[in-house]
Amino acid sequence: MLLISLLVFGLNMCSAVDNVFEGTMFYSVPVKDVNLALVEVNEAKKNTDLLFEKTTKKKARIQLPKSYFEYYKNAPELNKKIIVKLASLGVLNNILTKKKMGEPYSLLYKKDHSFNVETLAYVPVNYERGINVIKDFAKYNEWVLKDINVRRNGEKGKYFVDIDSMAFVEKGKYFYTRVSMNTIFKGLYSLDLMIDDQTDNKSAPKLILKMRSASNITKAMSGDFYFVVIPGEPYFLIYFSGKSEVNWAIYNFLPLALLRSELLERVYTLLENINYRATSVKKPSGAK
Image (tube, rainbow, N blue to C red; front, side, top):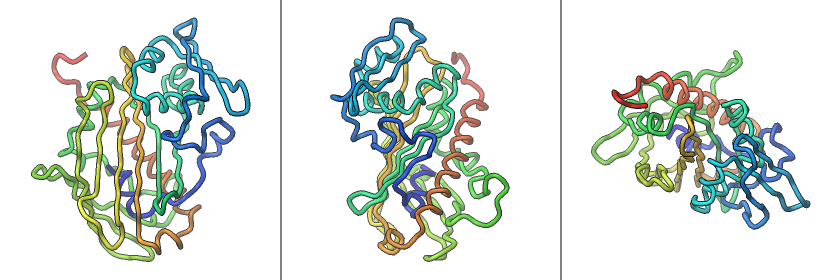
């Protein structure tokens, strides 16, 4: 939800990704545009093995561990594309060998007069436990904004935008968010984000957020959280995709490099908050 707020207020105006992923096959290709016809996917001989290799300039093959391959065979098309991109980036290999994701991945780009962002996250608890934290919307104000306005690595100065508060409104099922912009359109702004909870869909659980009404800053906005749940694994993955059409001045005149660095810093902080909350909340009685 916080990622959506950052999107809406113009922090995602960029056309590149982290250099650590540059050179991988799909590093600059949005998940939805991954061409599955270019990738041959098979089961690895050993359950711990993972292989991704390019076979030609445009084609590749993947060997997945049994649990991932079984998931892949039955997954919806978009979830298949998520798995392929995770493997191509080397992220999936990090998860399988190190039990952690490594450097977070985010892709930011302009298309169709809108700003778009996608990112991947690893949550080190099982889905049943983690989703209870994610769906506890009323308690977001207790943890989701921790250090979100604090510059990382000891840097001084303010971010382009500060996230002041985030409250869940039970009647209507939406988040009421207050944001302070520190340049160009200086001032306080509010944002209502409606929630469509589809996490009970076992084959393709997700959360969808949409802005309730347009404003002078943002014409339209949407964001989807897709949850990749591999049976038997003590963790799950999140793929987020967001799109926002903002005021023309923000779209055309804000420095892209500055905004990209600010967004990525906030993404890292948010992922740390999610991981901390998911691992620190006590398990429900009788939970595994």
